[in-house]
Length: 612
Image 1 (cartoon, rainbow, N blue to C red):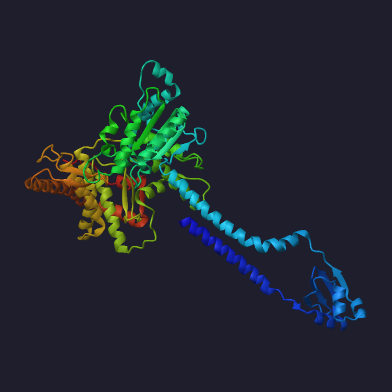
Image 2: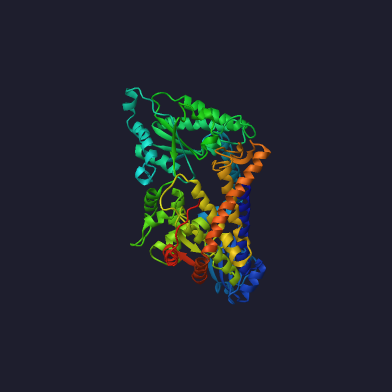
């Protein structure tokens, strides 16, 4: 209906515009004088007429003063006879140039047909637009239960495992699926059953969709892609109909891969309380389960699904015979990050001395999508600087932009505020440089980025998957370093430490309630997390402990904060001269890279302190 109204509006607007243009040109032309026959005869007799053009019964008259006039003769009679009947002077008539203009066939018929057919044509176009819109609505009604499947060609933009860096174990698991799609007879003859469903799960941006497309590219089979949210509509039964259409379409293609992205949109646990009674979503899930049970032993369709919330999926979806092959996609380590950066640097003009290994060292915790965005940001930054190639500093600046946001050099600070921020960041850096288990400092800056007034960037030397209590205590001390540096230097504190205090409090509470690192409370976890299924995230934590234990937890959290506070305070007070030098250097240069920072503190011969 909306499209029809839009078409009618534009049709009326176009007609009005045409009418306005014609009326404009028509108004600009000088209208010829209309003469009667007797007036024409008088002007001929007086010698005012130079030429008369006969066009049927119409007379086009040119006067000697170059004016134009028109007139009409009698229908049955000729011009000479008409003029003679009105008493024209034969001698005067001989001085007038008479010309006869024969009317063409096209013009004759156009003059007859256009006035009668043009309104009919306009009405016909209007009716055609209406019927076309109605037909579109009817076709949409009949295709409402069809699945909106995206088919990726196995020849255009083909992706293989060579285009997927890292994920070695995941690719090894999927090689079995690729081999089955290439040589199904080998498995069927020995009586083996290839898994019908393979579930890929991992953090967002780890390459689940990319890996699924790579499987199809390696096997050279069609790849059907659909999102789980596209099954669910407000009308009950539409989702199930779309599931049937999806599997029927894939069956016609024969050997292929069906990829359902974000399957948790329809595959959540059924009957899980609030939000779990959506009939449409449950019927869609039931239909997926039924379709997967209908696979025959020699069926060559493979279903790949992706999610970053495997914990909320229905158990029937994960049982043997359905998605019983589950593959974890981890965040890339330093070697994988370097390979991913090489892939995403294709097509970009890089400086010859660029070192992607250094970029990989600065990006722990980055996913493949983050690294792709990083290289794109570096190219954009180089282009804004009117450079012809991307240099190393462009990548470093882009890392900080992705982590913290763009630089805000336009944010004008007073001299006092700049000094407070310098001492705050110097406190973080000094505590980190003084503790044994701290990660190395890569950069200290008092240039605002995002919402941060300044920042201290510390990154691990090597990939770690476990953290000890002493490492957590080192992190706590560093978080409090800026707060203590402000307090001991100025005798006052600012709001700049609010985010540090919030992070420190949350970390200390996790150490006590989640990681069991409290000496007093022992190796016990406290608090039971509950989820509301319709929101799909942890929004409430139930208390599975008494009020007395709650008080003990608060005491232990405070004890950890106090211990980290004393450690940081001891470092700041005993090495105040180092703090002052770092802060003065930051005030002067605003940014200290790793080499400059290490050279600065090297002269003070700092000995690392181990937290007891």
